[in-house]
Length: 116
Image (cartoon, rainbow, N blue to C red; front, top):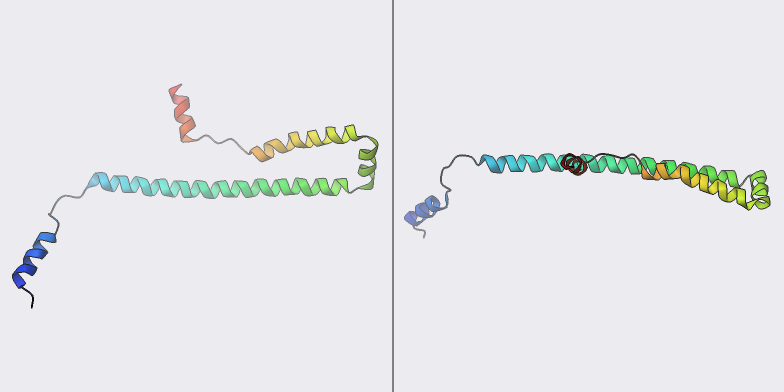
């Protein structure tokens, strides 16, 4: 046994009032969606860059292992350890740019530069 008058009153009370669309809310949601898409794309690009650097690092490491296993290189390192240290330092100097990767300008760094 329901009261139809109560149902009608409840329905009319719960219905939101008519008003124009909230454009500020819509703009904020659109901006958040664009930000989420941009961050997703940057995340994928960062992961791809990491994979590229890891592959390069693995290739250099494999080349070094192959090189050190050579009997001539092993004999040279045994005769002159100073030469081996110099070679390792040179390899490290070559690996630093590979590990560091390219420098990208970000919005924050652009804003900091424009304020200076």
